[in-house]
Length: 343
Ligand SMILES: [Zn+2]
View 1: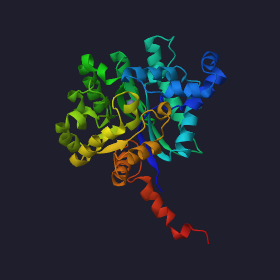
View 2 (view 1 turned 120 degrees about the vertical axis):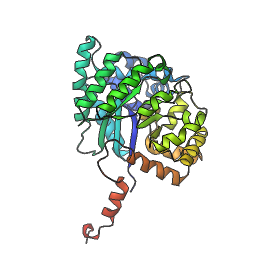
View 3 (view 1 turned 135 degrees about the vertical axis):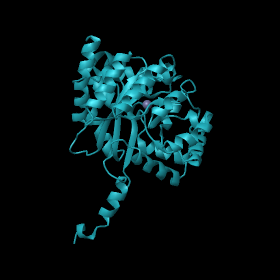
C-alpha cells in the first residue's frame, strides 16, 4: 500500500480554491462580491503567472486571511484533503510565521507573536481522525529585515517539537545583495543544530553557489542539472536532496512544458542526486501530489522505477519522519500478518 510524503508545501498555497472561495463567501463580503461565482474565482486563483514574483503575490491574498483565529479552520481542511485524497503519511508544512501576525503591531511585538502562531499551527496539525505525521518548516523571507529572520531561526530552535527545519523563501532573485546575511543566518541555524533547506536555483536569477554548503536539501534546484551539471557530483557527495515541484515551473513561466524536467531527472539519477517530488502549492495549483506523480509518468518525464525511487527518497530525506523505512514496507508486513486476519 503506497502512502506518500510531501517535503515542500507552503501553508499559504495549500488552500484549495473551493475552500478559499467558500471562506470568502462566509466571512469576506468584499471578496464574495468580487467573485460571486466559483468558476471565475478558480480561474483567477489558479491561472498561470508571467513571473515568479507575480506568482508569489498571490500568497499575500491567503496570508492576509490566515490569522491566529482562522488558521485552525484552514489547517483542518488541508489535513483532511491530504489524508483522504493524497494518501499522505508525512507532510512538512512551511510558512513565514511573521507574516501571520497582526500587521498593526510593532516589529518587536510581531516577533513575540510568532511563538503563538507556531503553537496554533502545531496543535491544529494534530487531527485524530486524519493521522498524518506533520512538522513545520519556518521560512525566512528575502523581503524581511535581518532581525526578523534571525528571530525566525531562534524560534525554530526553541520549538523543535513542532519545527523540523528552516528555509528561505520570497523569490530567489532577491537574495543577491544580502547574500552574506543569509549565509550568516544559515551558519547560525546549523550551529543551533537545525535542519536546513532553501529556495535556490529555482530560476536563472537565483543561482548562488555560496549558499549551497549550508543546505541539507535544496528547494527546487532545477537550474543545477539544467545549467550547472558540473555541480551535481558534489551535491551527490553531500547527500543533498532536490525538492522538485513540477507544476510550479509551469505556473511561474519558468518552464514551457513538463517534458523539460526530463533532463533534470535524467542528470540527477545519473549523478546519484536524490529527488523528492513535491507540490509546493497544491491548493493554488489545484494539483495534488498523486497528480504530480501521474503527470510526470504520462508525459514520459520519468518511468515507474524512477517514481518509486523518488517516493522513497522523500521519506529518506524527511526531517521528521520517525521510522527507519517508508510506510509501505511497514504496512506490507502488517497486511500479510496471518494472526491479524479474520477467521
Ligand atoms: Zn516553495
